[in-house]
Image 1 (tube, rainbow, N blue to C red):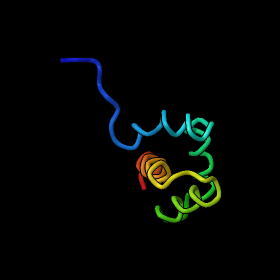
Image 2: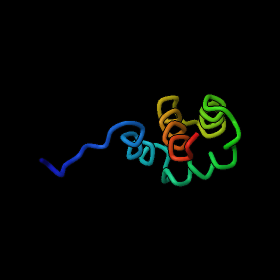
Image 3: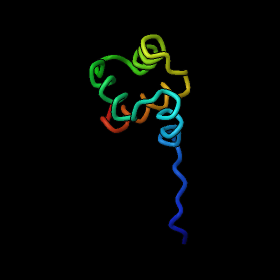
Length: 71
């Protein structure tokens, strides 16, 4: 058994998100905290329109955030 487990799922986008947008993912989770009552795609739309995050990255952030929140 190997200990080199490759990150999969939404979290696999995090290094690219941090590099492309210059903020740690924790920042984006704080942004999502401010709109936690909105639906998944509404949260994605907010990240895209107000923060210029690409669709795939926005969707990955929201998916991870909502899974962590138990939504």
